[in-house]
Length: 528
Image (tube, one colour):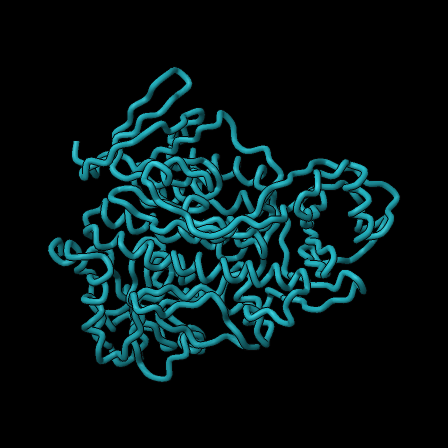
């Protein structure tokens, strides 16, 4: 058996591990997931899923059930705790020119995980193995042997690659000897889920996701599908509050109510720690194993899903023979800055703002569109060229032109089979979009390189006798061209994760194959 006939092992069956496995299965990569616990998490934690994560779940065919089980939210509110006055309202509805999901959702992690498990089972039956604790592993350069303690005793498994999604106390990271840099905050965070009527009997009309800032005691209020969730800091050295003290604290924020029932609580430590490297040989770190980010602004789980958006398509290209191992190097290059200087910096700024320790928050600019893009889509421009050019922050009242590294807008166009959204078009392929006048019959290459397709994009529909009908995308009113900010004819190269790999003038379209090969490696050309 060759190493690429063996499955990829995902160690850790939390949300990031499950999404990663679903992504691998989506691309047809054999996968097995080892989770040390014998059941999924029952803890009260992680309650908000951002727009970018919704897009990743959609790409992997795992979103519909999640949306049905969640509460959708189009406003992220920030209020002054002392006066109850709104200080900022981020309305995600301004993202309609960027995504088909201009909202975030609230769903508790213990309700999300079973839905992800079921999605994985549909795509890769039997891939999830509960009650398997990793003891040790050995990477011989051609594959990795895992030794696990299973329900019936020792289990040995030969795999091609190992993806460590085993959390902040990662066994894989520890055995690799990778150090973690950062800090653990002195204060802890407290979650309380309450059954309380704030809609009819005690109407408050708070946004479904509301941040109450205060220098003495701040709080986050989240409307979950069946309850209200309250998150607030617990000062250093303070013992866990009693249920009565929990209720008293909540009442200080929302006022007296006719009834209140505590459904569950959870107190946890808060970290800002990042692994010094995310890849050794055939082993990669993902999610909390690579970066523990303060879970403010929903930056914990959702940053981990960005990892799960990046690595699976790279492994898929390798397994399909369309790439060499060069393609895997881009994972840490692109994702590490996002976690360290991106999500980490945003979380720290958010904490300072909540505690009124900062006069302003550098992550929040002027203009609702920019704030919504930053908060809901994480504003991610990846460092696709390896030159340090990346960002997680957008600003302004109107959409900015798309640049290389940006996530492409998910707008509809009309293809040979009818309406198609841009992200669906590139979900399993690199796509070169040639923005040109279809009436002039531009030279649009037919597929010759595996994993790369070409289309002409034009507000003039391709006539049936043009020879372009099967490679034409009709863009009424130049909506997509305008959103890309293209003044002249150009070619745009999109990756399977919908990030822009290149933007070139149309007279340089001949360079697109070379740009593609630079990302994935030599096999893309040698197998043409």
